[in-house]
Image: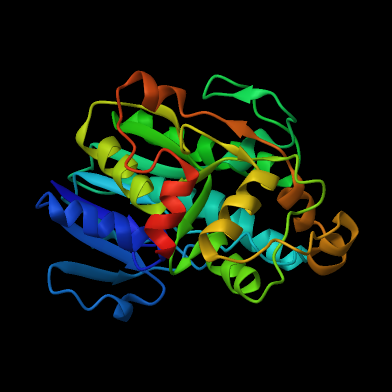
Length: 298
């Protein structure tokens, strides 16, 4: 199958590319820095979702489009940053779908990333793909993002929207920022620590995207491990794996001083369950947090 991936040189995108190549799919990549991917098996194309449409010729004859590109959410939210977060996802998806309309040989599959931020702050409520969206900036952005992806159905495409949780990996995501602090004896829970963290190992995320490409599924799928934990438990397990005590909890006010509006997202509780994947018999390589952390951190 011929696949093209936006954000294919990013933290998650590199794993998705590797996973698809493993099954002998043809892979093309859209990237703002296409020179980052040196593999001869991967065709690279320049595309900036904030600047314009993807190149038409890169889509013609593709079987599958995977859209992962988006401005990094984990930063202080200024008005300009919020605009980039929104537009890179919503306008970026819109531009892909608009370009597909003009392609002679259209793709059959559109797999679009989304995020568990769509659920917002939900306390201890168990959240599945059937749960209603929450409120707030990220929830509103994700709703608009998924709505743009759904427009591809008018071309007869199979549309899959994958709501990604907190992705754990060695060289990106939340874990990369947390481990140095823990190893320096400066780690601790965030706020009360009672908030649920729907985590997932990056290798399982790549497997979920491959599953979406290779199986006749559609609609919304939560890309989170089957066993979410509270932030206090996550902190305890991470401290144990790196061999350091978690001595310094970070109070809510300190997070808000450091990160502004984004701090609230760090403190939101979302007890997200991958119900559709569980019902489909999907087998996670890393269903438990301790095993996932040991795999990543030795």
